Image (cartoon, rainbow, N blue to C red; front, side):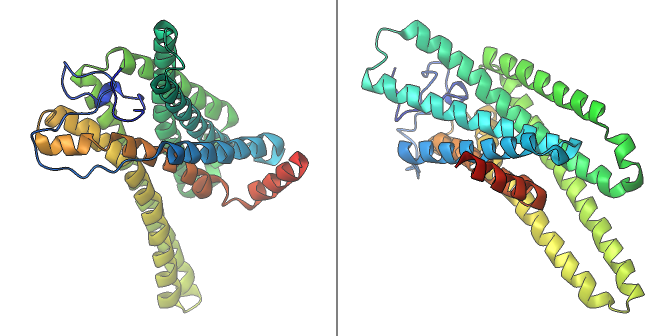
Length: 317
């Protein structure tokens, strides 16, 4: 097994740019232009993964402990935390296996390693798909809570939320199994990229519409208090900043990975595209960073959840 560094194989299969290339190998770029390759130390990758694991375990524990958080909105946040947890655990586990392989600790157990590798690939890919789905579900939930506030509890009921959650998990497992089984088909890459673009557009449209409604509501309140300009501008700037951070982090963390997949379809052998392929591990590291940031954006901003989290930490001591 020849790899340049311990290549994470969540799509190590998708990091191959030619049929003859090893499934775990990086794209060759020996004759093309000089490339900027940003390597990620294995210690840093493992450290980020462990931070993500701790954060998301705390989110799940807090929501499970506090019955006041047993609502559709927090169930979606909990499932997002579980998805991010699976992404981190499987990525860390895969890196550890690759390091053991390089050290020769797993020599002579190729069949076991291959089976484990396939299981981890399905787990990572499914967790990524479910993570994107739950980000979209949270956006839809917030949209309904703003535009259909009076009917929210009749629209977003617990049975409907559980059906949506179950459908997302089943679809994630099935799709990831198919993606890994047919990793060498262009249609698989196109489906993954199209799915990411669809989630990005959905989140952008919903959150921009929510921001517009908030600004409209602020203008109405400001006219009643004869303070139209300061209130409206303050809320608009705050809302725009929040929206920029939310969508910016989503695009920054997930965009490079799906750019990698897009280039594999558009220019798999082009030297310049080969420069992008060389940073595949960096793109996976950004996804781990997203798993660290998600709890800060969607979970820890809740005062009720933070209070429960303090109780969980005190009980653990």
